[in-house]
Length: 357
Image 1 (cartoon, helix red, strand yellow):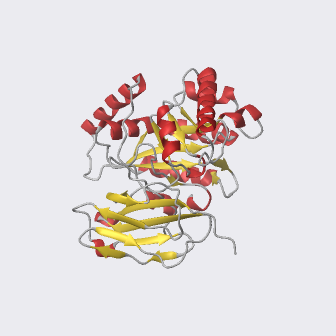
Image 2 (tube, rainbow, N blue to C red):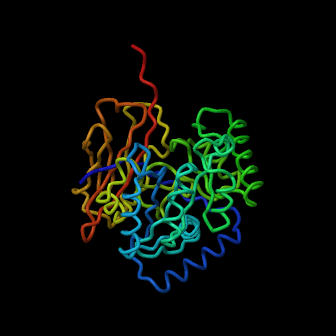
């Protein structure tokens, strides 16, 4: 099995403080969907993450041929493409998700989102969300403009944000982070008529303080860059996603990630992406009824399969003898499930700088 990047922070859910009219509508839609569609015991949603779109391939690009193949597979394969707000409403409201639920997010507001992706998603009837960096929109260049975003928003496209400027928020003063979040919300509300409800962490990096500020500034959910399906055990302020751009847009891989199921765990270490030691302690306890644990395997980007230590009946620890390479590493743990599906847990770790020689 080809294993991709990932990180799932399975923290305790923190429900939204207030329900908006959008949340009420999406809750009603989910109840309707559940009434007419079969559900599975492992109800979950795969959130896809795109960036840019073009005829030719690129590191951050999904080609139009790949995008057309993705849309055709979603349309013809019996998948239920929900808005991210519907997925959030299900997780925070304790509602079941329909079978084969999928949601679509796009990182950044590159002009190709408006010009190339939106017409295709609109023709297919697929909702999606765009994460906007407001300073990039102001600068123009290759970003979609406010008129483009206003047109998409008026047609039902959900507009979230990375903040005013795309930068790592960890390590900044909390006043600086708060000002960035507030400025982005004000600008989007002024241009589009409503503040954004969804935040996407730049580079997938956050710590406990940044996470708390995102919640305090009125965002009902946040998106990480770790892979895995979103389900009732997911942290609503660090929802996992699968990248489907660049080398991860290949149609066979796209079909594979749509079929993954959650690997539910507790006592996850580390609980947040930022770690203070390398190699870091890594471990988790697999939920009862999930197995067989002897088929569980974990892989690290750049290293391949990692050795596992099983402690007692359900505890798994990865005790590494050498530091992990690079500044960031992604670890995915998978095991086979029914009918050829795979359970999936991902970690996205930001490592401390290597000590000077």
